[in-house]
Image (cartoon, helix red, strand yellow):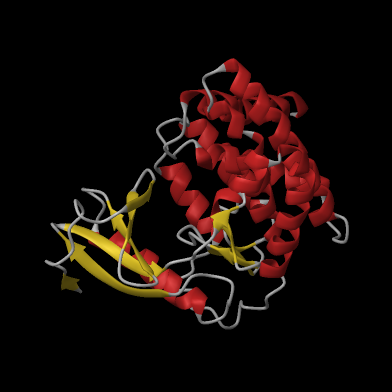
Length: 285
């Protein structure tokens, strides 16, 4: 790892900013994902190793280069994708939300159809059940009883051996020169593809919870509903799947997402999903 003294945040163009990192223009054809203060070296190395491993087998992802240090902060240099995310056509032509949802499903299926379980280093790409158990363990929003119920439910579901993105939404799908690039593989795991589908559906379904203005909230809710219909119909039309398993994954992922940095409105909705499930189980006993 090299410390780049010649890189200046003040003189560089910031492209975007998320919860954990800022994205800057870097050298020609590259960007720098610079993690915020407090984001540890080990976590950055984990993301870098994961990206390096996945790019060996998938072509529709950005190339990853090296880890650097800038003013006591760590960053990863990625290939710059000159294009836009699917959020742009969604915002510009929301009436095409179902069509875009269908396109998302086709891309997602292509990822899941890759037989990578015997090729990917599973010391780097962890199992989904391990990730979810860790989420439950560190959640401050779940009681011990709720954590135990989620653990029991997780055991009922198939482990699976597909590469799952686990953050597959329009903001992580880019269009560049009529090619699709899927970005942000930090949460990728090996597991049941239906788990990945349920995660995408959950992210789309609750997108409106992050809007405070009622008018915008209703607008986002409407086009996300259309997006969800298009995605679900396309993904599941040619696959044998269990509606019961899909619902169970949604409950588990609702519980796991409570450990993430999301709005209080969304936490309330997700927590209600968990509580309602536990009540329904209690009624059956």
